Image 1 (tube, rainbow over the protein chains, first blue to last red):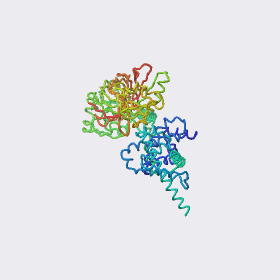
Image 2 (spheres, rainbow over the protein chains, first blue to last red):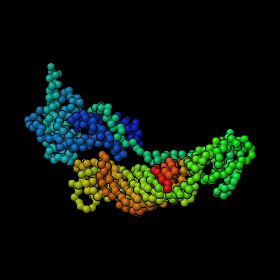
Image 3 (tube, rainbow over the protein chains, first blue to last red):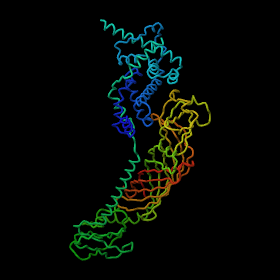
Image 4 (cartoon, rainbow over the protein chains, first blue to last red):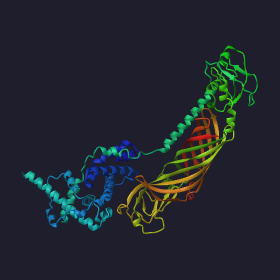
Length: 186
Length: 436
């Protein structure tokens, strides 16, 4: 912990070595978050880059209360949301194929062979709005009320989009695990 | 459905919890140059000032050492000078020093006598032990080494030389010098400088100290035109008109744009921000301000009733820029310490400063967003200045100036009782002067 404090102090003093050390230590964890919120690698790279610049700029406000990684993660998520808000007009969720409730019957608790990278790839295949809402609700733990204000939609839209996102994810997971089962069973 | 939904949520939450992916190499390369290295302008400028002082002292010492010490293996000539300012005694006694290596003193005021005919003076001088009598053709007052040819300077300094006192030389260098000194009393200068600005607070209260701790000096600038009139050989008065822009960065206050749609009040400023220079009142209803590290922002839209992030406001910056512009009228005295190749002047006096612009803004991606203005500032301030001017003559009339100057504001920056902040600034003025 004191090591982290020293690094933060060094970053605040403009020490290049400490700034790089902070990046090297946390970049891979935060890049995974960026990938969760972005549909392509270029966008993820931009989020990480802009997010880290904000982290350095706002280090002076970090009060050493709570998790430092959590604090950095919030900045990265906010940066991803800014990008999403800027590009939101380009995406039309309405065009996405309708999912019938019957497909919800496909939900299962058995997910053999699913790695974290598989989950990441599956989540990145979601349409942007679904992906953001699912991430904010399921991963970050925000309520629909909070999400509605964060990305300027109604609570109802947030709920319905989450529901659709879950169905898509479940179908993809089932497809993936089904394929795995087929491969395993020969 | 709900349970299934929760299951899929948990699957992703737990599965992605510890995921790490190595980012591409280029990301850090792009971040590195953008991160602001903490600037230490005060340290840098203090170092610059120290260097300027040391260089000036070194030049001063070198010039005086050249006057006081003569190389040991040279025959030297001391030119005797009468008490009267104009030497018109004929013949002139040129005294040859003995072979003892005596240092000689050459008075500050110099009257040089030049031989009428082309005569190898030193050759003759070296042969004879007795005094030499030379006919006088003209008397010259030397105000600057730069105005004399090297042969004359060398004689004046006691060097061994041949002295080609031709008619051309005399007419070129010796005839009009007195006249030019008499006439070039006026000087017009154009000077500019980046300025480091900071405040000193004489208030004992903790609040002011905390306010000042969150504010950082910005490198500002100052520039203008001045004229000076030479009162005597060393003393001159200087005045003119300058424009200066100073200010500082109020850190820890986040500014957001897009607040107009949520602003339900009309007329009154939405936000007030306490600073060591006064209170900032917002006049842009589209701006939302949030103090993340204290209670400097006074507003009805506090963080517990309004969240700028959830309201989708556009984040602009984490600090505010306070900017004050002044028109200055300086009244300075300049004292010439010496006038060798580089003139050195001590400059001191007072400036009368009139506040002409007072603005606060937030910057974002190269754009400025007006926030408001600072209330409670003194519209009229007096500052004292002390500086050292170095002047290098490019020609008879034009010279290059370098003036490290320290300035201290005598009256408080703000009229608000309790906030006794006296700013000071340091700048190195540079520019050109024209004598006429």
